[in-house]
Length: 94
Image (cartoon, rainbow, N blue to C red; front, side, top):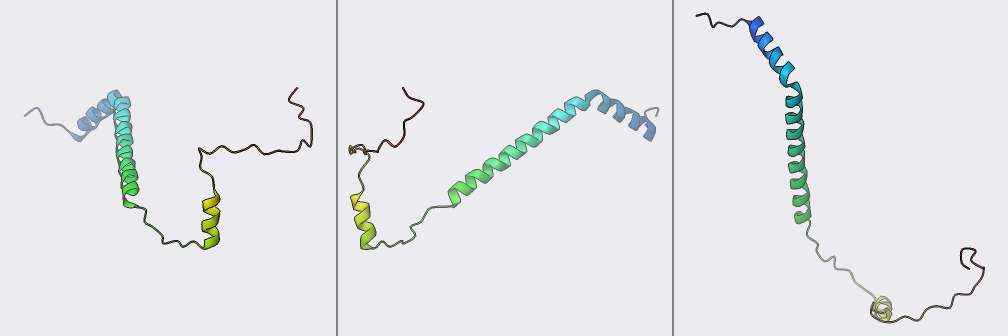
């Protein structure tokens, strides 16, 4: 029965263990915390992007707005350049 450990011996063993592996314990706990935070943030982002479905708001347009929208040109249409008056000389060009 010589294997009885006293409280002082347990403290000494624990102290030696943490003295030897304190850097490894720090990095394991830090990495574990970062992994948990990443998983929680990923779950939050994926849940919020699927929960908010876009629905029609039932907006109404009057005739003036419809006419203005019909007068807009598409992106493939060629637009004539506007004639801008030359008010000042640009010092950065020759």
